[in-house]
Image 1 (cartoon, rainbow, N blue to C red):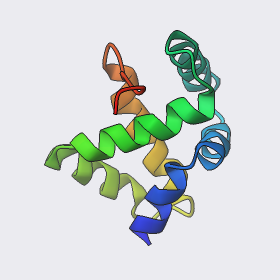
Image 2 (cartoon, rainbow, N blue to C red):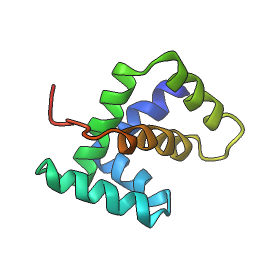
Image 3 (cartoon, one colour):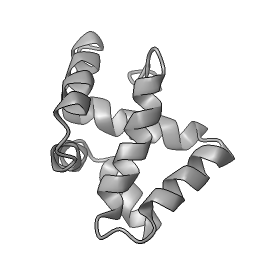
Image 4 (tube, rainbow, N blue to C red):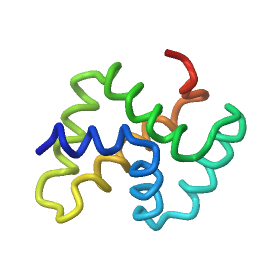
Length: 98
């Protein structure tokens, strides 16, 4: 289940839909600004951010992620909120880097 949820967030269209499902205009505005700054779409930025955070996640991030996903009817949305929280707390996602 975890793999399916996270793989969906790596897809730009699904990541953008999950971002909209967060219903948080502040996060959406910040992600739009970051995407524009990296000359990419919101969906691409979000999916790359998810991949980048998950590839570099510390044990603390994984524990936070799993804790927030547990017991919620929308674990994908909860996961995205945690991941974007880490992205937005850093100066730059550098999400175009491979």
